Image 1: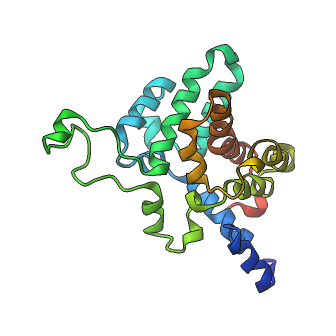
Image 2: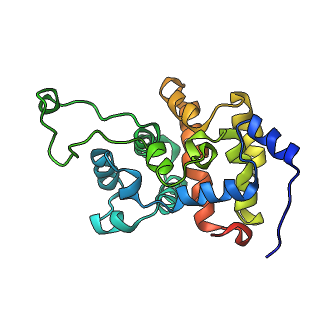
Length: 223
């Protein structure tokens, strides 16, 4: 196996800007996230998963084994054949991906306010996606939510085959304006964005990269 060495100064400079110190780290983070099954991703957010399943017409058996990148590909395929005048429900579905990423707790019900958990919800408070990942990957830069969003988008050119490349151009057009915001920070900002901007961020941050990774993986960084 070919070993690539990077000067310490270059790695420190990457860490100073919120990026991984070595491209192999970034590749491992992204692949780990992309390969997470939907029950793992939505742990503690089962109501959001059920809404997503119902909207997309997936069976419960499909959902149990479907990886995040496969869901992204399914959403991407659906968006590609749906006229823009009728695709709002798909972006609303994509927005269901935000609560697990942000660790935002579901809205309280009357039962919760009385101290009893709602049907189907765990007894313990749900942990955020970052907390669940950190349980196995302690370093801070091993968590996708902590990655700089622009860095993630640009690095996708390394992870997908050349036929699906072009993420650097997407970064310059859509993400450069957000500076050094992390994936989590930009995802949190979605709620306050105008509709068109919100849809662009949802698609280019949470759907398109992982759909491309599922359809056109670059063998160099495959796990």
